[in-house]
Image 1 (tube, rainbow, N blue to C red):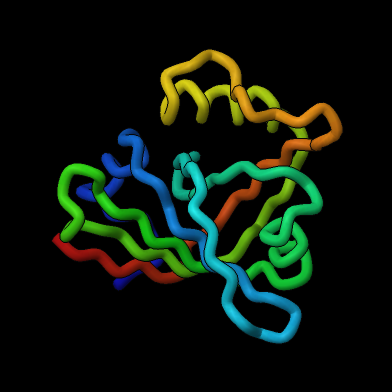
Image 2 (image 1 turned 90 degrees about the vertical axis):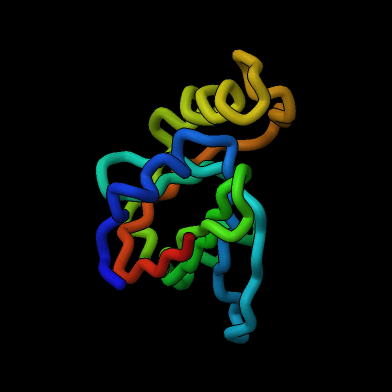
Length: 132
């Protein structure tokens, strides 16, 4: 139970492992969404479109939780609780294309909407729990 991503669980970020991202609604209820995730040093990174529910939630309250399950062993997982410490549009289009390559095997993110603005969110882990 530490704040850093343990070395033996960093491989999850190289796999096509989805993360379940929990954010807080305005009334305090949890909201959970599957997301593609990445690791940048010790920060966990995900990408979304501006204006979506998770975007509105983390802008209002940066506290989040993630659970990443190993796609090869569902009994091995990493749970992270932390805060979104950076929100940026810079590099977000290139990042979602990188994630599409990892998760879909394609060069360009195929679900982009012409009106959407992509955003990168960086999470500073404050607590981790692992199993398996």
